[in-house]
Length: 238
Image 1 (cartoon, rainbow, N blue to C red):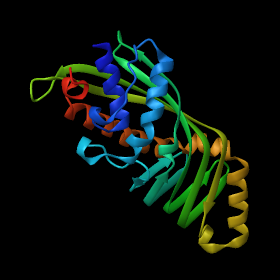
Image 2 (image 1 turned 30 degrees about the vertical axis):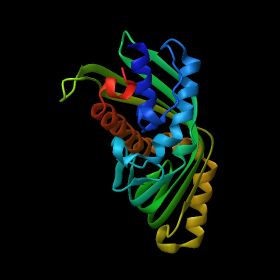
Image 3 (image 1 turned 120 degrees about the vertical axis):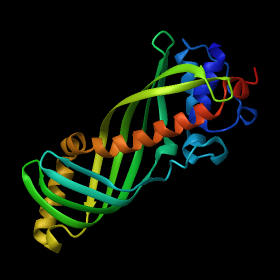
């Protein structure tokens, strides 16, 4: 059963059928083995496999992002995130007693789309309606998923994820580029862009969570879809 669970976890992140997948046999306490397996499969999962109910996650469509946070009203339409398929998996830890697993990984990502902004960012007022591009260097993510083992519609055992939680930290740098700030006022725009990029860490920490939350929801949704569609015995051949 331990091997079955490991295969499911790796396959969930890979999004491919077991017949196509050279998965190492890892015991759950062997974090280094799990980490290597997840690393190998991460790019495949992020690229999406329709037959396994896994969407394309890189590039990830980020439509209708909207939040009202700390005095800032912000929306982004037609957003696209790139870079997840280049994720580096730092560690994978499994807790069979608590029925949960945690994946730590990092990557560089870019996000672009059409934005509107009104309100304040930290100490400065802002208004804008134009294009936005964000680059995050070494975005560190930790996602924890809890699950149950249940009977699927076919009567066969499946893993059913219940919920997830995440933490994030932009560790190296963030760069923000926005057009049409302050109705095109060049002086005010340059002042705001300089402020954003000089205070990138605080900006990312305070205002980045809604975007990362949206991406994490998409990741979790696809892990759930894959695991619920594939009984353990069909994936492992057991």
